[in-house]
Amino acid sequence: MKIAVIITCFNRKAYTIKCLNLLNQEFIKHSIEYDIHLTDDGCTDGTANAVLQDFPKAFIYKGENLFWAGGMRLAWRGAIDKGGYDYYMLLNDDTFVNEYLIPDFYECLNFYNKPAIICGNTCDSTTKEPTYVGVKCTNTFTFKGYKVLPNGQPQFIDFIGANVWFIPSQIVKAIGIFPEIYRHGIADNDYCWRAKKAGFELIGTPHYCAYCEADHKAKSAEELRRMTIKERWNHLNSPKGQELRQQLYFQRTFFPLRYPFVLIKTFLRLFLGL
Image (cartoon, rainbow, N blue to C red; front, side):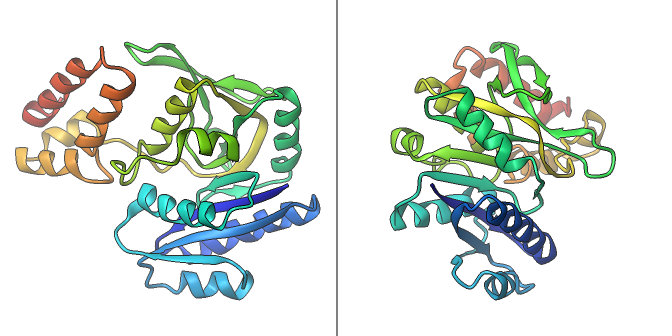
């Protein structure tokens, strides 16, 4: 088995180096062959050089203002062009894997003997509270669901953030990589539903196989009301805000019945800060 590790970074050198060294430790322990494909998205802190010092065979791709989804696409394409990989591992540079990573990966493989995206659950390193875990959707119109917390067994899920993913090459060949419309967020959510639409499953790991702090916080209605309409418009269209165009694309592609309601809600957020 050979794995392509796909990662993008921007000025988090200490995080990136720690992330990759912990991953290397687990891969060496289990004799897994891998290559690093990393996008340096305009770093000014020497991240790429630091990575090459520890991992001289890493493939480095230069980007600028690509943000997360764009940076992941660049490195992912590079890995596909190189070829020869059984799995593409998507990894965030602020995610630190632990000793459960590989045993959980193999357990998920044995649990479901078909191509599936194996998704790592993460928790806070201090509190051990869940941060990014699988979700099972109970109503696709209201988009309600429940968190699927690790229980020691692999579990089917509907979506999860791509902090730690193992995607088999068969799925990548079938559905491709992140669509070009995505710049930062939502791309991983899209990929989950795209995979399910194509008949593939997503499986959450039996344990928390990595540590990651929860740092994605949406603006509250109170914060939005304090903004001017222009400021709200800029937020709704910024890559790290709502990125309206890609939000609407996502809804129209996978949940068309929700689309008009999401559009109405967007206008209410813009003009009233709701």
